[in-house]
Amino acid sequence: MSVLVMKFGGTSVANLDRIRRAAKRVGVEVAKGHNVIVIVSAMAGRTNELVGWVEETSPLFDAREYDAVVSSGENVTAGLMALTLQEMGVPARSWQGWQVPLQTSSAHSSARIESIPTDNINAKFGEGMQVAVVAGFQGISPEGRITTLGRGGSDTTAVAFAAAFDAVRCDIYTDVDGVYTTDPRICEKARKLDRIAFEEMLELASLGAKVLQTRSVELAMRFGVRLRVLSSFEEQSDNAGTLVCAEEDIMESNVVAGVAHSRDEAKLTLISVADRPGIAALIFSSLSEAGVNVDMIVQNISEEGRTDMTFSCPTNQVARAEQALDKAKEAEILNYREVIADTGVAKVSVVGIGMRSHTGVAAKMFKALSDEGINIKVITTSEIKISVLIDRKYTELAVQSLHDAFELEKAV
Image 1: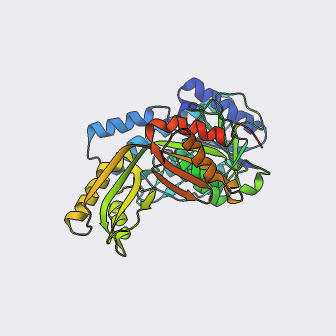
Image 2: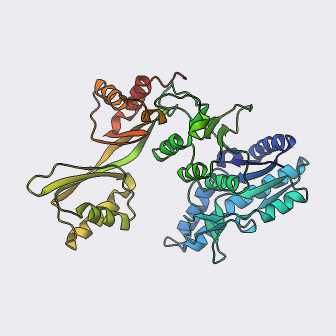
């Protein structure tokens, strides 16, 4: 019998009424003849509450105990969902990560999935169970300790199960009804996409679109898992939501699929760095060792053996970056005059697989920003993406002008 994976996020299981609503959706799929694996998140707000309790109890907490506490939210939801399905007459059983067992690395609070044996759940399907309700976000380490996968880990859990069980599809139920050309809260003309390629979704997710977690999209692309993003709160149809799929499954698409933005960006510039072989490696290895996530990088033209190096990173990592660079300077690993931090910037990007075969995208993007008097501070490009750093106060104007320039409100 075919397997379907359904994942319900925190807002979709925020209370008993919503759990009942989600269970009814599961019942519909069971009635169609599927065996269903349901991946659940903790009820909305519960993980933050648990994290707060851990931090209040032990500011320098043991990560193993942190995982033991914060994983409990998903366990509660899984049990309640299984009970609800049983009350509906659907044979269901809850599963915690260690019972599957979902095997992970030992990196507590940010573990990576290593394998998902299918024997235990398949055996129960063979005995008449129709729904396995699995607690998302968690697994078990080689040492036998509970681990968690990091924020958004339930999305990754769902895709991993879909890959392991060769599921027909992985449906991600959330509080939005699909993937849009841009944030509908910023641009009224934003249009819901019927389909989007894995690569486009991966870029949009990494650039600030919060519909899907980046790791889950990476996993889906690697194993060819068809993802569908849809709302828990709207009436469903076979064509509801947005299908995230392989590029060849999309007949035709706009040159640009969407506009993404991230406000939590900062720009740091090292002034007067020695321009010699290996200097970039020294700079960015120092930042990497400090856990700084560097994104855009620009190096100025060298003059008299000195140059300026500019890069972007998340705003909350600026202090860590400055500390790492100062430490490297004091140790005489690096030689620069000063570091200038600009924490008032935002990143705006256009993404589309059509950019591979069409010219003029960059010119159109830059002209649209210029027409609005928006100055570009840094530019980076890839095969299907162009990103710019601009003053944060112009974020919404930039998103709206780019959406209009590429006429994203119009379907192909």
